Image (cartoon, rainbow, N blue to C red):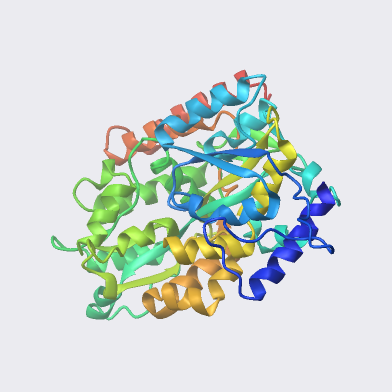
Length: 454
């Protein structure tokens, strides 16, 4: 069965090259030498897939007829909203009889699920020479740091499907008006430029400051990492927290000073949604945030600055350049009734041509395979900033998008809540930096101590 899939793939590609189309699953099946229908490797089977709602998979069902023709299997996709996804997936994964063969692993749950031993190692499938198709898989094509972030203790547990990485969105006309020339290269330069352009009409900078999950707990650790610090002393070797060290304190002071002095009204409790609206409406000069938000920022029906937006790599700190990144992935549940078929679906779904087809047909430019962004068709379709967007995102994925800039542990949700509360007190002036981070450091220590790290 395993070997037949590669044969069918070759035959199918030959049919496509000859001009046959994929017309709603009505294509002719591969035939044998005597004109008989060749057996398909998974004829009569069904692969059940659970996705978390995201633009990258919202219309994915439009593509699966290709997989069904190649394999003979039927694809059943269920998409759950992010707010309900974790609870639904937890219930399915803990069951002795699983209902899904491939599922979405959010970055926030990845390590918790691995620790619970709910996910089958991807290595077992990838190293099976009768099952895996190296050309289709193309491991080297994934954004390197995204792929590496899914490896735990030398074991690859999943493959990346989506990576958000911070880039700098800025107003080209504002820089021109103030004679600033190039965008800031460092965080210190960003503060200096924000000070020059800040006014009642145009705020200097926006960033996520809400204490809710995925907000200030995403951006402050990025600035801290860029300055050579971290939430813990040496992840994953030394999990003792380091939020009370000088670099953490100075990074927090910088973060608070930048947003308190040059942010828009309400920024100190803002999430990404408020920042996007501010930039869309032309009231923000600099906005460092994930590339997956660029499509919303430049939505022609809402944005007033489509032709006045520039793109640059994230500013460099005192130690290095770090782009905050969250990686979502696809994996095979250990309780899957069709593990082999689940892997084959993942291998196909994340392949170069399927990902590229999805981007071109469904308007999702944040590809997990950087080299695909260099194709002429992609550059023509997503020619934001006269091609600068693609150039910046490609460089970011290749060099700076670091999913391990903060510790990936099963306890992260607790840690992020502690950091969020501390930063919120600092930003709103309720507590001095040293006091707030000192308390946070003690609380993080307790969480990790109870988890058995020391």
